Figure 1 (cartoon, rainbow, N blue to C red):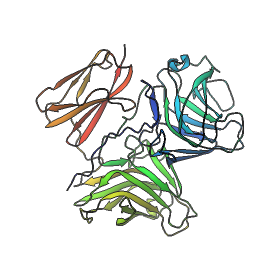
Figure 2: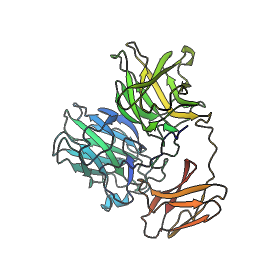
Figure 3: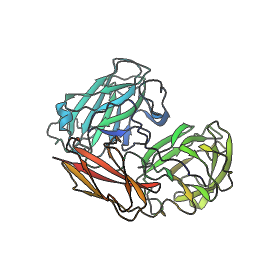
Figure 4: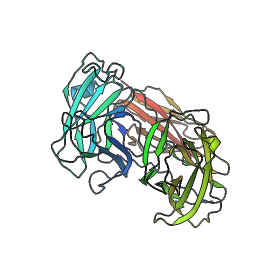
Length: 443
């Protein structure tokens, strides 16, 4: 059959500035490495970008409805252990966030803190630094650059920060709607995922592979920690979906990263954890214009509630001339029903090759690691032809890609003395698949 799709390394960084060594925490599309905890208002993820005509053309963002009765409305972001925020305290580097504000002149605040020391009622303990920015317009994207305004608890080490708290219009209760995108902040001590997807068969695992673009959903869709992790699905993150009880045919619409041309022995697979089993999950694969190519259903049984099970949609009967660009999923269709389900590992299976069955690629060796002036890569000799690329943590390619032939030029070298310090990723692509390895620059 034809190739399923071309794996694109598209960098959806929107309007965020190209400041070296800043790390992209969350672009609410495919670069999502923040876990959101307590939130006063309504935090609506995977929302289509309401204004792509300006500086931010990313397909998705977050819509936030501020809690009107809270004086200090907060969004708690568990960003992970930050390496060192000294440059952000000194002003050498800045936190930035793209916003659509409801009006100009509104303050937005980011507090960096130690989650162990900072409790809900013990301010200022644990709050290392507070930064603010002020909106200048409404209805259009702008990039807010945050400046230090306060150090409530300077006893907190600059290497002990692991949480960020976002406050909109602090000190004043108000009814407001905001959009957020492209949140850049201090570099973390370790980065769990590379900036782009590696596996062309996997569309969404809520971790490193997040290639689906969600256009619409009736209920509530959130990326969340896998609180029901088991041997059947040990993933750290999943998607949680709460059905809209007021809709008879509740739907989720999402676009694949590239058009599919299924056929042969292709199946679409998905893991679900159904808290209201038994349930029907209908998958309508459509063209971009919404015409059905095929409509298939699978179900969980009553005995399969509250456990991870795999759903399978057989695509072998689809003619090769039909191009699929999106899916419409109906959860518990034809009824006004409460329903919560967790979704994970939405992927293709081809010729019996599934998510866990792909033969691992031979990995190149990166040394020295950490490096200072020179990075060398030893490529395995048992391959046909491969490509080496190096990216920073924000997905910027640092040097031209190198095509490596079998048995030739197995030792590659890059001069990196002029590159900013921090984390980088070596990407090794071979025969339609790739692996990535991190390395650090220190001096």
